[in-house]
Length: 241
Image 1 (cartoon, rainbow, N blue to C red):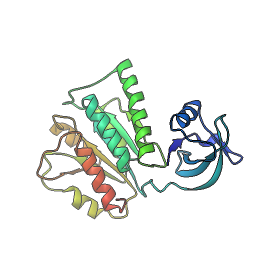
Image 2 (image 1 turned 30 degrees about the vertical axis):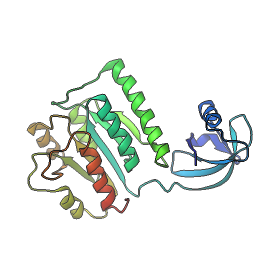
Image 3 (image 1 turned 90 degrees about the horizontal axis):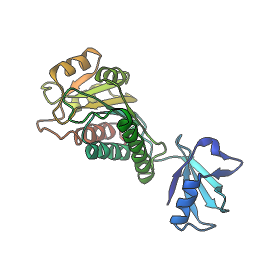
Image 4 (image 1 turned 45 degrees about the vertical axis):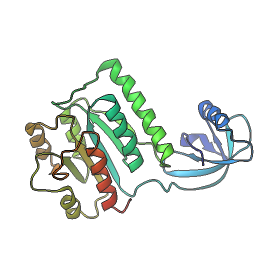
């Protein structure tokens, strides 16, 4: 069933009011009067709607909690990487259940967009997140934001109840063990590095702020694979897969 995200304030009086873009999309999909589709308010509620006119207003038939939203929040912090890689991370992490994606600079980042280029990329990344949320039947569109510095990213990531720093040189604590030790946690963050990995000083700073340094196993994962791997583990451990 076709799915559209609209602002909650555009749902009232038993009618959902679509944007011109969404109304045009309905025409492209050849949805006819009387046919139904899903409208989501972006706050976790789905509305089953029926096309009733050509002015962007649609009749609401029923509503229910969005089944695609996880029971826990997990923020994904991914270091800058080449455009196609970070776009893949955003798309797949939204599909897997991330509550937000935060992109940040790191010492070994190959790509570090700035200024107008970064603004354009951020806008594109948010659109990718919205399309992925539609496709995967999410109840919310995860935000995509950019941190100005590595330390700012660490500070934000450390706010989660369980903040996981995925580090290729960690030898003691596995991701599995860390998750087992903190049962009942409702908010997570996972931080992964760029193509060249994290500098030891960056790992030390993360631990200093209270993040748990964990290993994802004996294999070295690509920068676009690591965040998906860590997020999948969190979702599986919390019965969201």
